[in-house]
Length: 189
Image 1 (cartoon, one colour):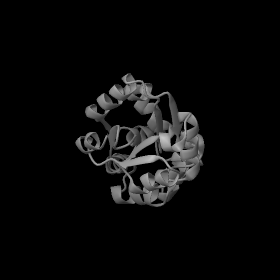
Image 2 (cartoon, rainbow, N blue to C red; image 1 turned 60 degrees about the vertical axis):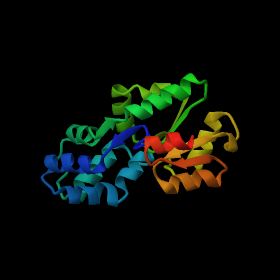
Image 3 (cartoon, helix red, strand yellow; image 1 turned 90 degrees about the vertical axis):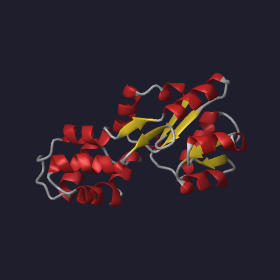
């Protein structure tokens, strides 16, 4: 989903959070992303309150100092549309293909996206990391997506902007494509 169906910026999240916690964006990045904290949240391995407590601690704030609601809002307001990809997804759905959304995403980001964008409604099934308990490129999330697609791996097509994720899907027999741009993708398909 991210950087394929919708644009996002971790840098924007870090800058916005930094403004709320009076710390440099580089420090927020270190605590939230470089440490793997955000990835554990995307994998559903920690709760929102655990995420916020670990962020607060990692930034050297005493417990209860940061406004969790404002932090989550700043972390979510990082998306902007890719109309050409939403149109492509709409066309694929109209052509009668079964579509499964496979994404590394946390519950707050997905709720934010669903409230503001139409494209999640196009999918027949959702395979979301926070619900599965692992993130791409873990094999289990791809197997769940294959089940949701209700077909064999070699009958599935997978598009991702991260080569490691594309390689993992390919190892399972899925036809996988690395997304670089919409014109490039249209040329391939």
